[in-house]
Image 1: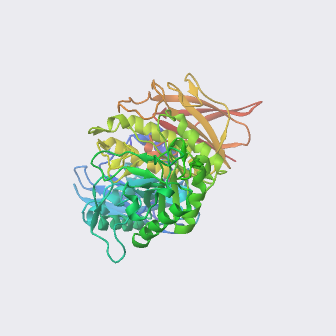
Image 2: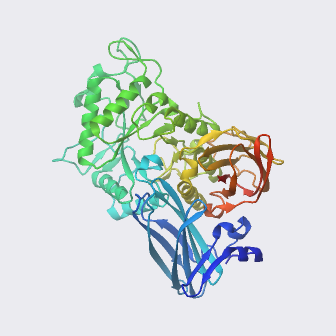
Image 3: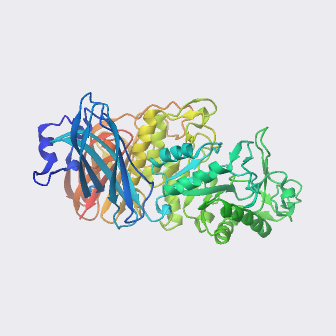
Length: 610
């Protein structure tokens, strides 16, 4: 139960209706100290999640609450559920529950999603008896009619001969992170001929480029199961890659990209010994190549119910020429290739601008959102995540979101081991706070290499729990993270603590953004961190130095303050906490001195304005 100080008990009890049987708590008024002291945490509520990753407005939401009585005695009480938009409760529910000692049960609690589109909600679930809170757990709900507004991209990398039940179990696990789109990585046979058969003659299995067995039914099952969770399924392929035997499939050398102007050396990409082939590169601007590969992809979409064409590239290829000796600037071919593909295939499109190579050109195209695979060679530090997201917004006038591929603990992924929770959390904090998302979670766990089937590094139970909190937070606060916010240069400082605006080591990285009605201050803790490099190749980063009782000074240049709140994926399951502050007028506006109770990895302080 909560070990609350008396004043918090009094503040928490809002309404006690004996006749109606409803007891509501103003949970948002709990202090951090009060709301984190749950002596029976996890002994009643073991999990809370939703049946789908995303919902349309007015959809029926099914909230799953898993109960397991570990108290050593019978339990009789209530479940109280709060559906919240930011700090406001939009609906409450209450159910009576009873559990015998060691009894388990899963409750299915319905909720009608609001009619507002593109909104994120926090769901707080409490087990109570009388005025005592015995246990609590949270989840989140994304109500969005299209995934590309707030994409949370994951992946599928293995397609063995397995039952549909096993595939369903994997999709169910991914769904708990609210992943609303899956990249089906290396599912195909040859890059230039993804399907080894047609509608009348589809083999049971085939080999991929690494000579792995790919089972057709498993691919199909994963697509269908993803759709059952409102996840999009993305058909992955290179835009310009083929096996070395391309001529036997009707591809011509005249369509190729070459390293010289006399077409003596075709551009290529070497792959490991024992794989089916290395890759040869073709000209995305060549109309014959376009028609060829689009038709092959049309065959895919006829047979497999993919929603998205995920286009991969190999980054900067240096100086390149077409077959006739004309210089080809590859990024200049991307806009037309994307637009023609979308028109030809009639599906959504995503394009990987490796190390932002071609980002400006792709941003002009009809991609659903921006996607950049970042490497430390050019983008080594945490700051570049924000810079990439900001650049994407600037190039698209704020219309397109950004997904970042950044492979954690890469240098350690060659041998079995564990991901470093500290560096993973800091990387996600840097990406999420900036308004982006991170492709990292999928059927094998978490990505440590650009070759998605690599699964040497495992997620610890603690990291899995942290990622559940971070993705709940990404959904619950999507409207303060990813929904039309713009940078502002309002003064920010913390008494006695060094801050930076660009993620320097041994600082609190602090910056502010605004949208109508809100100003949002992001605090990312790099104190005690001697490095600002995100990848942590050695998988050995320590946690940043936590701080308590911070005095945050922040100046509002315009408008009147209504309230100030703290929300963090590191505290209270992301529940908003109303903060104390003092306001004084000066020549620059209104200076706020805000009491911030704790900072671990990432805090978001938001100012609600009248």
